[in-house]
Image 1: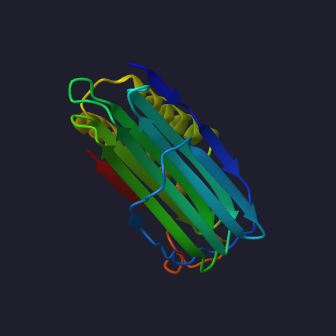
Image 2 (image 1 turned 90 degrees about the horizontal axis):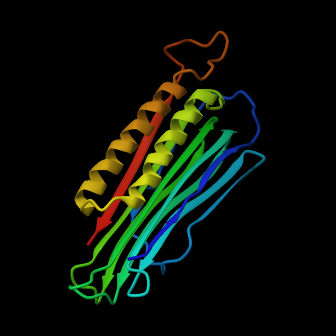
Image 3 (image 1 turned 45 degrees about the vertical axis):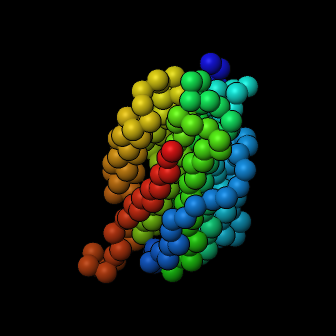
Length: 232
């Protein structure tokens, strides 16, 4: 069997650093994608308080490449915003292998977005799909995790937090060499996501608060996690 492992680590910092209090975030949640499998992609930009993030992992296993694994782990730090769009997706496909010589296809995508502002309009979409096409006995798993961090005022992740996240990404990469059943891979990924959540909550708690702001009126830092899995 052939193993194809693609590694992608990106930490993006940008957008204006104006000190604004954060408002409620309106999130649009989980779904299923119907795109064809391909190379993983990531895109992120921020301009004048508007940000767009697009990340994903895609795998296709077949008789020519019986084992495929790909993960995406991207951090977008946008600062003060009034509008943002965040899209994260994972798709895994196994096609035309036999029960005697099955395929294995795993796609995992972690997207982290930090932002601050007043009454931010956020469209957050997190998608996954796993599909077997004439592939009896194949193992196919797609998992997407989206972490949205909102704070009263802009902040950046510390060097220590970035190192901790890098360690988790290496552990995610290492799953590409694992021969464990898909159910175990899923549990291990959930455990890594829990570690990411803990790191982000600790980091968000250090975000600055405005001078003279009533503590009761000050919105607390928030970390929202969107998780969606599909498997066959």
